[in-house]
Amino acid sequence: MFDVRPYLRCGKRQLYLDSPQVMGVLNLTTDSFSADGLAADPARAIDAVHEMEAAGADLIDIGA
Image (tube, rainbow, N blue to C red; front, side, top):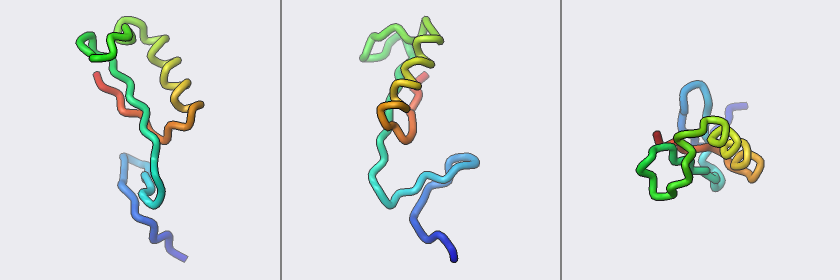
């Protein structure tokens, strides 16, 4: 049986569009509106990604 759900191909992965998806946004640039300083501290940025994942993010948009 074939999977007929609508999806977007994202590299080697498929993002299924048959239900809402939650996107986390991580702004790394120094001129980011969030001014959270993550550009200067990669370890904090990685921690933020893990927090988003634990909170249920299906994908993460990294602005760099």
